[in-house]
Length: 165
Ligand SMILES: [Zn+2]
Image (cartoon, rainbow, N blue to C red; front, side):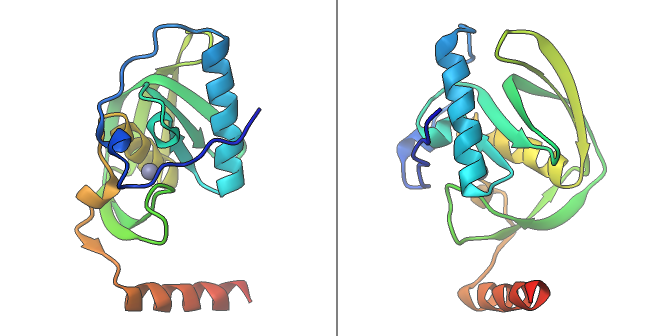
C-alpha cells in the first residue's frame, strides 16, 4: 500500500465526470487499498478516486467501525433532512453549511464486482452524498449556502479546543 497525493480544489481533475469502473483487477485493488491508507492518514471520513487523480467511479467511506469501498455507487433512496457543517480533504481549512438528506441508501460494487447495499444516517448519509458528488465533478462548496468566514472558523476552533481540553 502507498499513500497518494490528495488534489486540491484548483485542480481541474476534480471537475471531471468520472468513468465507471469496468476492470475488477489488481490495479483497482491497489487503488482502493491506497485510498484507504490515504484516508486514514488524513483523518477524513471519505475519499473519492478523483481526489487522488483517478477519474473513475470509486469511493471509500469510513462508517465508524470499518472503511467500506463503493465502486460504481448509486443512491437508491434518501429521506429526511440534516443541516450542518461540511468540509473536504480537497478544500483544506474551509467549512460550509450544507443541507443533506438524513438517510441515504446506496448500492455499489466491491473490488470483485459483487453488488452490495449500504445505508446510513447522519454523518454517514452526508458522506455518501458528498463523495458521490465528487464522481460527477462537484465539490461541497457549490452546495454550501454559507461558507464560514475566517472569524467564524477561529471561533469554531476555539470552541473545539475547549471541548478537547
Ligand atoms: Zn470531498
